[in-house]
Structures are given as C-alpha cells and as structure tokens.
Length: 136
Image (tube, rainbow, N blue to C red; front, side, top):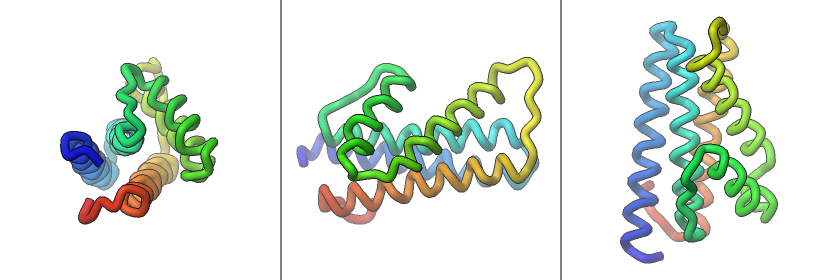
C-alpha cells in the first residue's frame, strides 16, 4: 500500500477509536443522543478507512454507506450485518441530532455503541489481514 494512503488509513482508524472512546464516556454519563452520534462517527471513519484502500474518498455520508456496501459487503469481505448496523446507527444519529423529539433508552444507545465497536473491530481485522497493516 502506498505510504500516503496507509497514513490516511491509520489516521481514520485512530479517529474511529477516539470517537468510540468518547461515545463510551457519553454513554456512561447518560448523554445518550451524543453517545450514538459519536458511535456513528467512529463507524463512519472506519468505513472511510476501508474505502481509502480501494482508492475512494466519498464526499457524503450516503456515498460512504453505499460504496461500503458495494465494495466490502457485496464482495463478501464484510458481513451484511455491519452494513445494516451502520445504516441504523446513522439513522439514529440523524434522529438524535435533528428530530424535534427523540428519546433513546440506555439499552438502545448501548446497543448502538456496541454495534459501532463491532464495526470498527471488523474493519481493523480486515485491514490487518488484507493489507498487512500492523498495530492499527
């Protein structure tokens, strides 16, 4: 892999992990909407790290989700459950950020944060296996 691309991939994974850490802290403090939002961005950065490996830098959230499905789910490299989880977390993030009235329970928020963690872990495993990237 080109060193410049590798650096960008590593940066995206570092950002994904930072967002997940923040999501965990927000979840513990009871700030459920923002925990879901940070969880989404963790998964979003991991999806974009994967897309960098196939030469893609999407310009929108929807493009990231669509291209992730096309290049990593349809190819069999990632489980379709990860695509479903990413879409669900995105929808909840948008509802939490923009809907007039939305209330997430702690179980639902915790589930979304866990989904994002599994997504990031799966992305890291794929990057390490397919691109021989160590210590992501």
